[in-house]
Image (cartoon, rainbow, N blue to C red):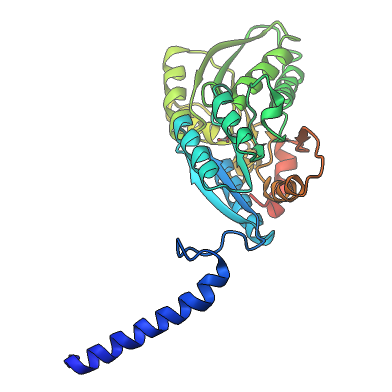
Length: 333
Ligand code: GYE
């Protein structure tokens, strides 16, 4: 216990110390009114709004962004929107208020961004779209869009199937597990796949529904597909996770995935590649989540006033089971 005298002495010492700090350090910071740390220490601040944590792809993407921000010495403010557009809009508004240097986000859906993007533009904060794009007609609302060509991924998937079924004489029944309704990858992958399979009139999509890009969604919807359709020859899943969930439903229905039902997916995350190497999947179109390093580079360039291209496309490939076996040992995600 402190005695009265000691307590007073200690309080006095604290008071003197506080006064000295105020007179020296804080005054030098020019921030004595708020007592906050100086905002401008030369470090760039990036506000990033992520879609959520729906898939293995998303987890790898989040890790890539966090790690590369650290490496680039960029202060990252990160928000997980849990799959909700309104949460993303709130996060972006917070970043505007906090006067971050750059805002980047991966829009959960394509539409409905004009108002908040205009607010960022009016505040003079540049915006970079990562992974997914928006359908805004006014391209001046963002500096660039870095990510994959989802139409191409769908097209490559469809072309593989056209080739695989070129000797088929009867109908080939396809079921499709779509990604999040209204998202760019769901819209574009559906479009690309549809365009490619037109080349073979035997190929028919007999059922198509969203599985929300999740394993649980993929499993539940595949169960319904199997119940409602006695003959399913092919599953086209817009990502690995939904395909992995569907595997459980297919096996439970007594069918052999990869043989009774051919499976095509997109992403090529490790678990998907393992299923492909094991012959449970038949083909994967790659979609790289490792966008972090390029994003940090762009943040610096944008802030330095450098001109950057309006579209930066990620380079990708496709995998057969043999190619998956070869790639797996060095796969990073
Ligand atoms: O394919 C899927 C994720 O936007 C490319 O989102 C991304 C997609 C990816 O949930 O797994």
